[in-house]
Length: 584
Image (cartoon, rainbow, N blue to C red; front, side, top):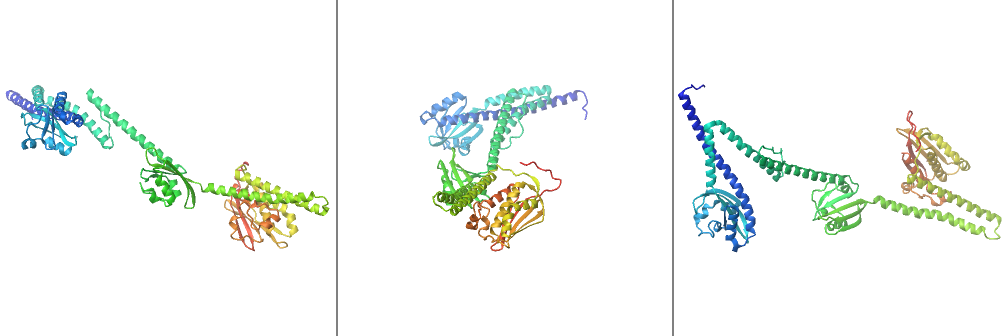
């Protein structure tokens, strides 16, 4: 609604301005006073905290001087009270006056500090009746709870607030609502950035997400404060991110390492265990901070883990779930220990295999050498009949050939097992290779009247020389055990999916069920005397297993005692259109 112009309008405008000026004066006085009161209390809180630390280090005999000196240094009134709210010392009054119940009831900030540790108030002081701002803190001094209180008169604050109010009122008389808006903005430019900084620091102190960065205000000092808070935020975030990254990297390293790792706390509880350790110990899940003794069942290993947190190092070998484990422990520099679990089952098996191999090879070499030496000594004797001399010479020749075959097989087997030999990958006819290998044995087969046949056909991808050796070794074994006149050896070839499956079958004496799992071991013989008599080295089937495995196939054996034996092996099948591989 438009107001009419004239004296009435001017009077209304003057009254409105006066009313707004009065409201502005009152509001400004209260706002400035409250802000200054709050600022004064914050300064008092800081001073009390510092004074409390100094009081804790002082002595009773110097209490009065302490209060006076501290009051002179800070400009505040400094008082010290006992647990009964009685005054012990005061920078303005010296030693405390007689204690009265009324005095104690009015000291609400002292009572609050005794209950909560710190407290503040704004009230009249009973000695002089002046209004003070008080801030108090509880201190343990010489074994007792006392309270140190700092006080600051409120009169200067009220006077300063009144002066600011008068200035604001005068400004409102000139500019009215503009002054109030400008004042409001001015106050917000101070309290807003301070509130943002306070909120940011409070979130950081509580361990919560820091939230957005504090904005930089136009006031230089506040901008510096906000910038410092932002730097603290950034550094803390960087430290947290670095710690999280290092933790994740360590966790990933523990999870992917092949050996078992365990980290134990000072009291031998499992701080962390990687999947390899759980697998080696046969554990599905391990509860966090579970005692190591409740998780590990082996008593010897349990004692080692529990002692690892007090002994610098430890080591043992233990069998857990059929596995041979080497357990090593090392005490950490900051407490606790680290446990390493290494599966040495395969290592121990290889050591046993090596020991057996040395023993077997020594035995196999010793027998023909002994025969050769004895025969040679006999041949050297004078007067030996020519017929007997020829017999011993043929014995020397036969055992020399046997030694040569044994050494050749050992060299071949060593070459296959060491990885120095790589099979070629060329198309070859399995049936043609089988017939070619049989030609080498045909004279012996004819002499013993042993029949032979090849059924089926298939083209494989592999090493033709290796396939020839496989057939030759299998044929030699079969010829040793098939009966004369009615012996039969057959080769059955069949294509199955990606493989050509070959079965070499005979009607020989067969293999006992107890010996069947071991026939592919080096130097293992079912019939030792007959095998040596026929010139076998005991390495033929071991060579067959390595050659088949090297070409990507598998080998197995089936037998029934007195019926016969079938050795089945597979080689990759050649498919039309496949690219011919270059031999390795």
